[in-house]
Image (cartoon, rainbow over all chains, first blue to last red; front, side, top):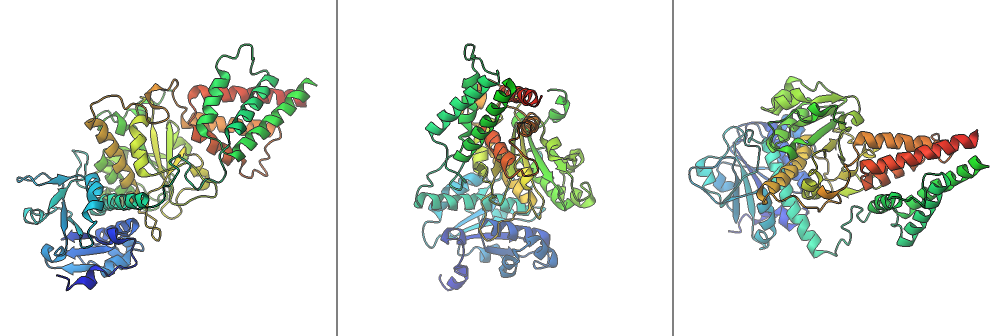
Length: 273
Length: 273
């Protein structure tokens, strides 16, 4: 069974064992542009293993290379097979993309479900996933679908269900990458920052004390320009607090706002003088 | 505010109010095939509202129609605008697709996070989302990115990060559809309130046009009090944009802020007088 092992492991510098063990299989593709588009979508998401079964076009034509837009090494490295069986012989899970419900119901999953189970599926070292996509016009045959463990259906509008081939690969490859990213996050240090700022923010957030000094300054300034009457405050300061607290200002932003307030106060004084 | 309502509601037979209120905005697209591919990806996922800002190609060429592959009515119905502002003026949430980290960090979300918050975001009847995509070669400019409340980054392989335009739209449209499907599956209870706003907020959010008028007013006022020198702007307006866009001001908050600016301008004039 390991006789073709060098084939499986031909991407040792790939983005990680999990994504390396996912193969995209295209059957009977008619348009070389779609092969290029698939290669680009794969490489964007960190997949590299492309297999073509009886393509109905010149798979490595200039149109394929052009649409690959820098992912042409995946097109060049793609294996071409005579049969689906040959293309997926080492796969421990074969999932066929299916737009239609078939006469014989088959275990059906969504792309999201595929992603959610992927880490467990690919946990064993010898586990391999093949995602199989059919012809642009007629999809997979019943015989091909019946070689799959599961079918995956990408939810679409009922009246317009036929996805472009590269778009379908894009969606499933995206879910695969999300699944891989989730394993990276759970095994590393906690990112520590589920705020909308992330770790790359350019300035430290203002402290509570910074903010309270700003609100005092803001209120003084609004009184100075006769906008705010502390004897009839209504909800003015509460609304301004809510607005600025929601934004979570950083220290530089507070410095800018206080600089503006100082300029306003200076004007207010000169106006009275 | 409802003067252009027929425009908003021009898809009454669409897949449901939530997906109807999502607009895809393409700026400066060079390849008509990409416009067709975007239209197809949109229609597959149940989106219908396509806007083009200064396309650099014949948007309705035969190549666009061919790649649309049955979604050509979206291409035909696409609005063409001279400016981003015109294309998103009614949007209450503007999200720009960004591949790169910028010199000035901006609130950044993933496609999954966009999907997870979408039902709450679009719960109010007047809420509208615009997803903005830049040029194939150079993406969105800093000025365009600074008109967005948030940036969305599609996770990609580090060494191959540039997605095809239609592929990028496909991923975000897919997450939008997943979010809509989740609302259909849940027991039709109100989406609750896991966005900062949800259904319980006391005022409608300000539209893009409201916000741009506020930023113009803010800049005028800062010039009037000699705080801002447009000949030496540094990053002042960009930082203030980032702060206020992050807070997602509602209409009353914008009214308050503009009232303050008017009071400041009055003082500045009397100070000079």
